[in-house]
Image (cartoon, rainbow, N blue to C red; front, side, top):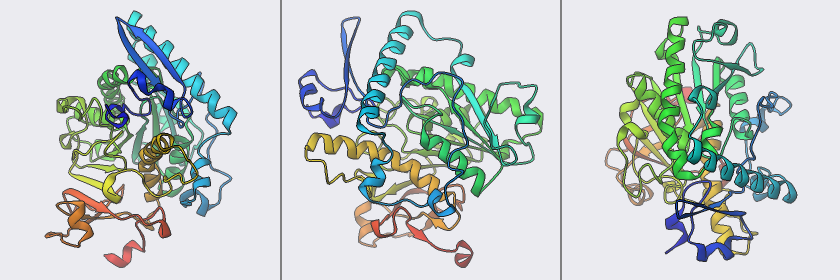
Length: 408
């Protein structure tokens, strides 16, 4: 049995015989429940348990304009996502211990009311400091601006809203686009064994939908709403969209999780992202074969460099052990979807995809329709099906950098 076939996201389920070869790159915890052995392997990018209140300083405010939206393909820049070795080990241990405790607690006692396990942390152009908002919040007018669009950003398995990528995405959105943005935190339900977390996604998605619905009598329009989610968060976003009757104008999945959603067997569409979840649904795939999915889920599905690992900057040439190298590559590639979305917030950074029957034909310039469209919030809705993007290291991470007005 190959390890790649048993991947389950930022944590992975491996046969016990594979443990020894992975100990150099992960911290493992065995959990026996009802006679079943579940092996949890903490990913290098996983975060430790974070206690409320969250430490929400405004991220990236001291960064230059260029550095906030430009990234290098060098390996040291990729490794900058990680703390030093001691902190990294502590984070791995903290995450696995947290997952162990949360999993055991949920299996024995069930979960709390969803309103305590799912929280919303919002910022606006005029008030970039984060505040917590609630369903039917009587002070929502002081926390959000109903005259502006609103984006909901949902993390994936084992993550939380304190992650650097979440805070940086929120900061970039506020600076580059403006309006309202809310980070959705479901970490008490996400920091558990993978399949248990997957089973939690429907109620998280419905609660997100309920929160959005509670804004409508307060002056917000459904036409102002965008739902964005990474990994499992992509499916939560889709479920929220379905809860809202498929009327959300834009739903975006960032490398939607595959295991337990589309593979080995696709679940029903009410439990995952689907094109019926919004008026227009996009997905971008960056690690389709392992953590993500090869299945088209939206009106447009963008495949960056075929959609497979390794993405640019994820080759890890300095790592000698093949197992470790492969492990780091697909984790890194999984998070490239987030990085590409962040870059696309700058209107000058164009991720232009070409509709084609296959990546092979795309590389041969043999695309019968050849319809093009741009991934992200500035999408033109001019294509459908699979679209392929070439992201070259020399212009990393942008597919093209052009003035959009010149193409009109």
